[in-house]
Length: 392
Ligand SMILES: *Cc1c(COP(=O)(O)O)cnc(C)c1O
Image 1 (spheres, rainbow, N blue to C red):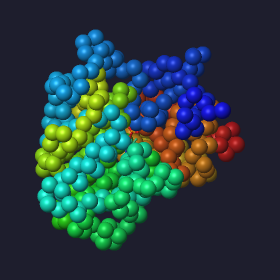
Image 2 (spheres, rainbow, N blue to C red):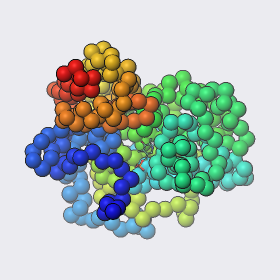
Image 3 (cartoon, rainbow, N blue to C red):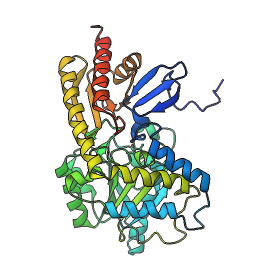
């Protein structure tokens, strides 16, 4: 018999009833150190007091009015994002998938309004993940996600990771945009080298194609900059944000330059819940905390410490791990064994990690993780790795 909850997830037999900082607690009091953070969502830890205050204060005032009216919390958050990024304007969604949908629509509308309606193609990359809507699965194009759900939305051109010649051939008079994650998350913490992101920007400048960056997972301080593309010193035309920006409250956003967004006039897009006062009150507090340069330099300091300890872990368990990759607190342990085995052994040591493609275990702790918790996390991963090989 089908469970009451549609069984599209293979869930671990763990049930948490409370969270605090980097820790999750089961009903019997068992505590787990959380290196997954709701898949890079709980950027400021569980039950962060400042976020709880922002949410509950707003909850007592006003929950929802619809986008038929002005929403001061939404305007405040949009202004904070505009003032700290390349963007001139922001649309709020409830998820990363919805942000992908708008990014795609925006790029097509841009060319339609420029009297080049044939420019509809969006170039995407193998191993990418942009969400689970019909548009987002067509964009990523992986067999695993699209099988059985056709016919797919046309207009996506899929390239192999690192296929420079294919890229030059693919971007032409029919290209509306290039869409890419600066660091692939689901694809296995695969960073796009800075020169490649610069090269993509140059190619877009030369051909007019728009550059869409999907920073749903790598954005919001995760890499040690507010957004990952800042490391390469280039900016996109359109950017998708979600996950960390709500700190656990559903919130996403599309950020864009004035030019890229020019076609999105009244009536061209909308969302009932998107940008509602609760989500935006929380988002504004999250952005205020994470955009602080002192906060980001702490992320970088802790990331260096964590990485150094993970490098040592890899050296201690060469039969389990191959290497550490990623940037900031978006780290991946490339495994020589099935990553699911490492994640499962971690459950036994009460440490939570997240598997990804390309044989990688993701380490995405709250950005507020402490030095002591980093040491504790690596000690637990060390015991878990020993269990995987039976060298206990
Ligand atoms: C998670 C994710 C999405 C989809 O976000 P949802 O909020 O699950 O819809 C899109 N892009 C990237 C890079 C992601 O990691």
